[in-house]
Image (cartoon, rainbow, N blue to C red; front, side, top):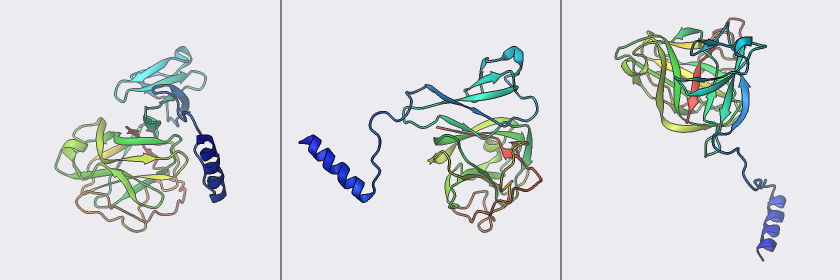
Length: 250
């Protein structure tokens, strides 16, 4: 009887144009290395002081700051990041690039960079790197907008004493978690009520927006991103502001 009910259900679903999910596990087991992602790295990067060279070919290196696993391809000098899956089936981390310089905030203004994650990720926090500190009461906010210009996660107005008290890597929780789907366009955004702190970026990365302001909703107050904006059209400018270096984490 159950088999008959299932067949009938499948026929109805097919008639209605519903796509039934595949049966069985759809994601790798927890902790399994699924695929490497080659990042765009500028210069000669080093992880924990170890450069990727023929002498270190295929060496697995763990970044103690972010607990990310990397493999060195000595023939190209490029580190590859190993994607690891959680029990929920989403990637533990997604990396935009490696930091090699920094860029400032626009006071009471929004800056945006477009990106397309190569893996889906359920994120509750973000790791970023401060190039110029602001250990003061100035307020800053960083977050992610979806393609419709809706703010899906952000840290909220955060004092410099927490956001950028010193240079180097920092990790802060989002006010609420968000899920990013592989292959879809999202936008990293930042604002503040001051322009003192600078956040690290990967210089040799071209983006369509390149730090451009949204066409509406750019002006902010209180150091917090607006709940929605109108995203500017990508122009792919010749001047490269690079891509903000960040890690989305669950």
